[in-house]
Image (cartoon, rainbow, N blue to C red; front, side, top):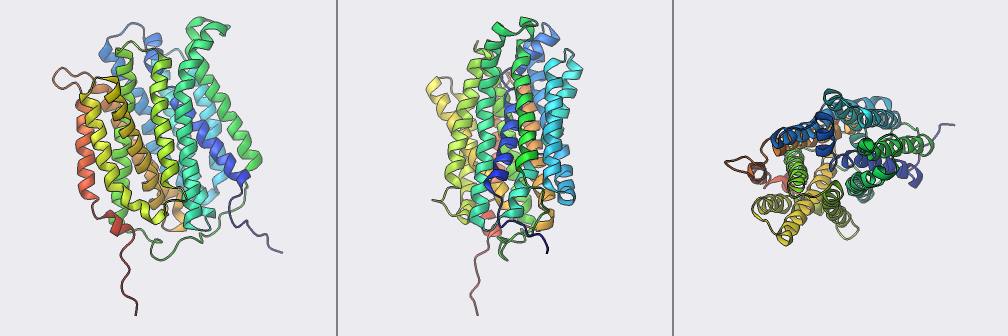
Length: 412
C-alpha cells in the first residue's frame, strides 16, 4: 500500500518552520544595535566616517551572502527536499554566529558575518516553498505566508531589543571580561538557532513534495514581465529597508543613544510591520485583492523616506518610521505571495530568486546608508536616492495588478 501525504502541513510542522524563521531574524536583528560598538571595540579608535563605512559594509556582507546563497539553496531544495536544507541552514547559522561573537579580528568579523548570511539564505525561500508544496487553497497559502512573515518580523522585533538589553545584563554577569559583553546577545542567538534546529528534526515531516492543488490556470504561470516587476519591488523595498536600518543605527549613535535605546527604535519598526502583515493576509482581505496594494505601498514608502530625511522632531520622526515600516511590511509579503505562483516543481528556485533580489537591494541599501551618511554636500543623500528609485519602480508597476491576474474574457 502506497504511503499517502497529508492534505496540508500540520501545525506541528508549521511551528518548526516558524521557529526557524524567528531564530534567523533574531540572529540578524540582534547585531544591528551593537555593530557600531563592536567595530569600535575591535578596530580601536576610528573616525566617524570609518565607523559608518564598516557598519554599512558589515551589514551588506551578510545580505550579499543571502543574495548569493538563496537561489542555490532554493534550487537544491527542489531536488533534495525542504527539511534537510532548513536543518543545514540553522546549524551553519548557529556555528557562524558563535564564531562572530568571539572573534577579535576585523577581517574575521567580516568572514563570520558573510558565512552567517550564507547559511541564513537557506531558510527563507525554502520555508516559503514548503508552504507552497502543501497549500490546498490560495487562502491557506496566504494565511501561512502571513504567519511566516510575522515570525520573521517578530525576530526583528525581539532581536534589536535583545541586542541592547543583553549587553546591560552581560556587563554585570559576564564571567570573562566586561569587554566581552557584546558577545552575550550573539551567543544567545546561537543558542536559539540550535533550539530551532532541534525542533525541525523532531516536528517537521520528511515526506517528499506533492503537487500544488491551489494553482489555477489564471495564476499558474506568472508571465515574465510580471515576474520582473515583482523582483524589482522586492529589490527596491529591501534597499529602502537597508538604507533605513543603517541610517537609524548611525543617527541614534550620533544623538548619544546607547544600544538599548537604538534597539527600541528598531523594535518599534518591527511591531508596525507585524501588525500590517497580519492585516494584509487576514481573513478580512481576499488574497487576490492584495495585488492592488502594491502601488499605494510604493508611494507611501517613498514619502516615508523623504519625511525621514527632513524632520528632526521626535513626533514627526515617529510618523516617518511608521510610514516606512507599514509600507515595507505590506510590499514584501505581497510580492513574495504572488511570485510563489508558478511551476510547482521549481518553487524553491523561484522564491530563491525573490530572496536574492531582496538581499541585493538590502546589501546596496546598507552600503549606501553607511557610505552616504552625513555627507557634507547632502547629508541625507541615501534616503532621497532610495525614494527616487522607488518612484521609478512605481511607474513601472502601474499595470502589474492586471498582469498578475488578467481580466477574464467573456465566456462562450
